[in-house]
Image (cartoon, rainbow over the protein chains, first blue to last red):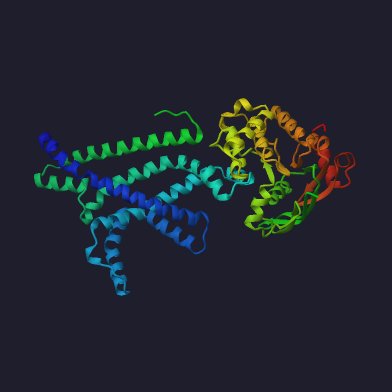
Length: 236
Length: 247
């Protein structure tokens, strides 16, 4: 029988760790975004040597499950630190918090996906506008910031929204390396009371609400950006 | 001499698009470049304002010698700030109003204040009869209106030379006339222009000189009446006789 009291009782406990999920998703996205911008510069400017390396890394990251990437970072990062220590760097592989590992793995994952998304938004802006901008005497950098980038941002937001929501959902596996977020808390509570459906339904509701709120925020952001950039009269 | 091009060569992979173009333009001249599609007309214009880099060749512009194969960033910016271009597909900035499309170049290319730039842009819009559309975005304007704004965007900069790249090719036939009218008005004011066009009536009646392009070369060049009435080269005769237009 479905125990609604148990479900209601465990809901606040699971909700209490929701900030961990949100924190991880936001920090990984911000760091991932910054790395993604560098990746895009390397790839679009076709910088020698770096371009093929970065392209290969991006395709590796996009072609493997995030849980595998997380384990690779979980077991690989401490070894890297040991190696660095051996080379004389002051690193401490033992004191590495699980959150740092999770943020590292998720940032890398996000950077690959976001970089592809930025590139597709960049290519969707008609390059001939850039050409027109430089022919009226704008410096190339100015042509980018005045003409290309505003349109790129408006085109980028919908994809970025999807990537961010995917990342929130993907954080549901970090309990594997010991981080207590929504899914971990649901696992813990359900195994104590042997009430599985109740706790997982709680988790489900919390995920839906979080994702809905962020989806709505991005939607508003997209409309503001499109109205501002293209003057289209879309309403919320 | 305002502009002198010497031996411009450009190839894309094995395709020799320009095979050594020489062309000189005096101040106030209107040069029409005609010829079949794919003969290198547009590529020539794109080499003049560095949207493409030539494989070899040089340009003497306002008494400055520029190696077209190895221009410096400073030379590119300098040259672009003294010339302007009108594109086949208008290429208006989609995120800017008609007014801002025109004033951006004044503000960011010529360091004018925003107020002064907006004033000049309004005058330019007024001249092409589109002042009422100043707050419209390109997506809200017809092709003809967009192209007239494209022309205003170029001419407001007061350039020494305007390069027109098939300015009427993408237009509804009904709208071609208005754009050609604007161009003729410009020519009458003494604006130096190089016009790549398929509009033979324009080439004949407005251009002071016509250059016939074929397969990456200028086969024939001369006064427009000479080229149209007495084409010397067989390929020019063939091209002109194949055109249905009554020029």
